[in-house]
Amino acid sequence: MPEAKVASSKVVAYIGTSDVRSISVADWDASNIKGQDRVWSSHNGWQIPVDNFGDDEMAYFATDTDFVVKDAVIPDIQA
Image: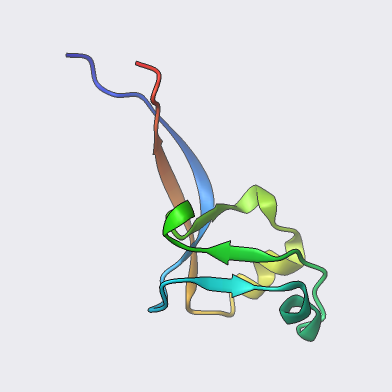
């Protein structure tokens, strides 16, 4: 049986204790950051690709210990 192929990319992963974590436009505005509504939950594996964030948003994640930037391994479903 051949090994499964995987693709890797960087993601912003939520590692806090809540079931769902969201950052709204208003939350971003409170930090003087132009951002979009974001939700981390079981539906997205508590991960969002870094390509979805701007530089200011990424700088924010460096200050919030509920988030980490890490490599994501995504199974390739085409065998």
